Amino acid sequence: MPRPEKQLTPDASPRDWFGHELRTWRKKRGPLTHAELGAKVQVSGSLIEKIEKRTATCSKDLAERLDEVLQTGGVLTRAWGMVFGQTEKARPETESAPTGRAEVPVQVHEGRILGRGSTTPPSGSPASVDRRAFLATSGLAAIAPIDLAHLVTPAAPREIPTQIRPREIRQLKSLADVIHRQDNEYGGGGAVRELARGAIMWGASLLPVPCPEPLRPELLASVARLGVVVGASQFDAYAHDDARVSFRLAAECAEEAGEWHLRAKTYSFMARQEIWIGDPDTGLTHAEKGLVRSDRLTATERAMLHTARARAFGKMRDVANTLRAVGESDAAFEQSDPAQDPPWMAYYDYAQHHGDTAHALFDLAVHADQDPGQAARRFEIAVKGHGNAFARSRAISETKLASLVMAKGDDPRHAVVLGHRALDDVGKLTSCRAAEDLRELARFAGRHRNLPEASDLRERIAATVQA
Image (cartoon, rainbow, N blue to C red; front, side):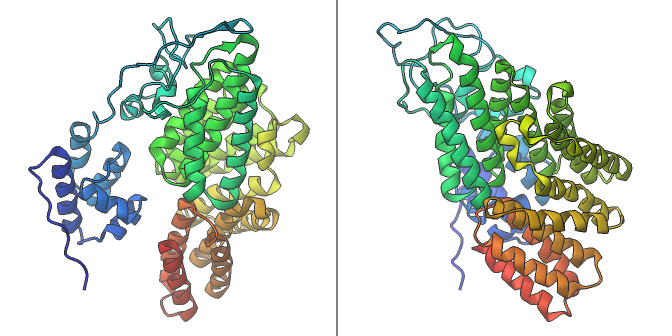
C-alpha cells in the first residue's frame, strides 16, 4: 500500500502555506501524483514533493508552469515573490583587500561585470544577490549595473588568487572544454551538472580580481566561453533559471570583451532554451540579436543563428517563415569554412546542421500538416553523422525521427525499431531533453494501441525515463 502523505501545516510559515496550496491544486486536478505533475512541468516528482513539504524552494518559472498546468489562475506565481522572492538577500562583504604589490600594473574595471559606483573590488567571494530579481528583469541593458558575478557564486568564501595570471585563464579554457565534452557525451545531469556548477562559480569569482590590462579581454572571453557551456549543460538538465544566469553572464562578458563570435554563440543557446520551454517569440528575439552585425560572424555562425530562427518559426507553425529561415541557414552553411570558425564551433558540422534544421521541419510536419519527408531525410543524415562524442545529439535525432515516422508515416513497426535504437543511446545519458523527447515518442506510440510492438516500446520508454 502507498504511504500516507505527510500532514501539512499551512499556518506554520509562508513556505508551509505554499506547499499546502500546491498539494491542494495537485489533488484537485486529477488527482495527479508527484511524478505525473513533475513530468508535466519538466521537473522530477521528488522536487514537487519536497516543495510541498517545504524542504525545497520553488523557482519563479516553475511556479508559472505549475499555474499553467494546474489552471490555478496564477495563485502560485502571485504568491511566489512573497514566499521565495526574498530568500537570497545580499550579504555584506567582510573580507579585506589583498595586500602586497602586484608584479605588473593592473586595472580594476567598473563595466557591466563589476557594476558601477564601487572603487575597491572585493578580493574574496562576492556576496550573493537575489538571483530571482535578476531573472525578473528584461534585456541586458536592464541588468548592466548588476555585478553578475554575484549571481552564481556562493556565500561561502572560495579560494581565488589575488591577481589574474595566464594560469587561471588556461584553467578556465580547460574547464570549458571538459564540460563541453562530458555534456555532449553524457548529458547535463548527474556528475556533469555538479562539475558545471562548481566551474561557473569559480569562473565568476575571478571577475572582480585585479587583472593585468593585456589579460583582461582574454579573461572575459574565457568566462564567457565557460558560461556558454555551463548554461548549455544546465539547460539540458532543466535547471532553467541557472542556465539563464549563466547565459546572461556569458553575454555580458562577451560584450565587454568585444567577442562577437562568443556573443553569437551565447544568443543562439539563449534562443534554443526559450524555444524549448515554449516561448518561441523570445527565442526569435535572441536569435535576431545574435545576428546583429552578421558581417562580423562566420558563415557557420550565421547558419547556426538562422537555424534558431527556423526553430522558433516552426514552433509558431509559421510555414512560410520557417521554410525561408531553413533556406537561409542552408545557404549560409554552404559557405562554411571550418578554418574560419573559432574552435568551439567545430560541433556545428554537417550532421548538426541537418539535425537542427530537421527540428524546425518536424514541427511543420506534425503540427502544420506539411510533408514529413524533408525532416526525415535530415534526421537520417544527423543520426548517421553523429559519433559517440555527440551521443546526445544522435539520440535526440533518433528519437525525433522515430516520432515523425510514428506520427506521420505508414509503417509504425519501423518507427518502433527506430525508437529502440534511440533508447539504446538515451539509456546511457542523463539528459532531461532526451527524456522529454522519449515521452513525446510514447504519446505518438499510444495512437497504435492495437500494435503489441508499440506497447512494448512505450513500456521500455517508461522504464528508461523513470530510471
